[in-house]
Image: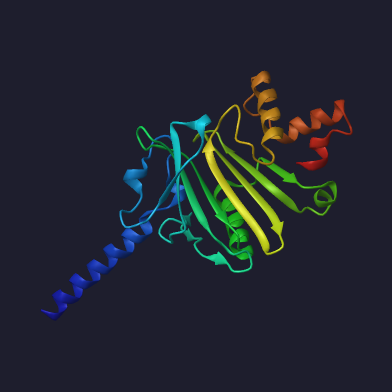
Length: 227
């Protein structure tokens, strides 16, 4: 009897652990998964309007340790120096609750480094790396990265800025678009993708684009602030 009871308890514990680890932001399929289907019922989410321009969309935000999981790493917590709690935000269409993009924001230096590390492990080298100044580029101190997964039609944008309280990282994951939200580096990236589409060459890289720009304009700002 005790053996059976032990087995039952073990099964319950395993099921509990599984349910807690099931959710992972990295597993979200954009424009397919619904908020109502993937968010655990016991997680409190606060929903906000985005604005008139995006009237059909809202976003929901939380600092829950059940949601701040990316690539099997828990990024919940806060930085007392920043007086800021790490948060995740999911943007969705109010008509069907389908997730269109999501964001993970971290204010702790070590967690920010861990996020960058796991992104590199998951996605490889960034397709675009941005810098705040020419001095930062010389010292290789980036403040932004873009990864593009054409196969999954997904773009990953990471801002990685040094603040008085440490490194603040914000990951935005969204579908590949012609125009993007006003985030650092996106204007350079849009210029590049416009030229890539114009050339009708899907293998044309940002680095090739920079070399072409440099030939025509040695003082080109994009060459000085990105790679």
